[in-house]
Amino acid sequence: MDKKTKIYAFIDGQNLNLGVKSQGWILDWRKFRQYIRNKYNVTEAFLFIGYKAGNEALYTSLQQMGYIIILKPTMELPDKTVKGNVDAELVLHTMIQYRNYDKAIIVSGDGDFHCLVEYLDQQSKLLHILTPNRHYSGLLRKFNKYIVRIDLIRGSLELKKTKINGRSKP
Image (cartoon, rainbow, N blue to C red; front, side, top):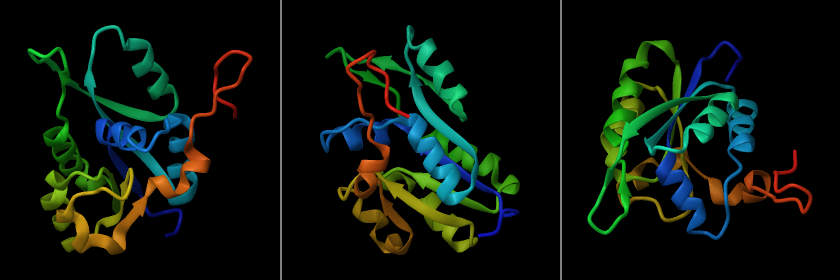
């Protein structure tokens, strides 16, 4: 890819966050934004997450890191879990932005994005699918040539705590 090719990333925040946590580590969101900028020349990174009151500082911090935050209203279920499915928003914004990018990166292992991935592939607009780990949907297996597993680059993207103030190391 040359520098003129516009690359946008569309990130399922919940899928990415829970996918790496299931492997026993925490993603450093700043490092991830730098990684997709440096490795793939991603100019716009849309991060889709459920809105939860009290997390405004987190959303501001993510914006300062270079993400475009798309918040989805959440619902609290009877068992007190919070649900904020962002699939429809991710698909919608990928299509709203369609004319603005040359290639897209979808960050999720969720099979609900099969139709989007298939369409982007048919239009020669799919660059990669970044999955959190090896447990991604079987519906995405036919697109294995696009798959990049984030767990395989854990060492570069893991949040590392320091003893001094709890912040991640640069």
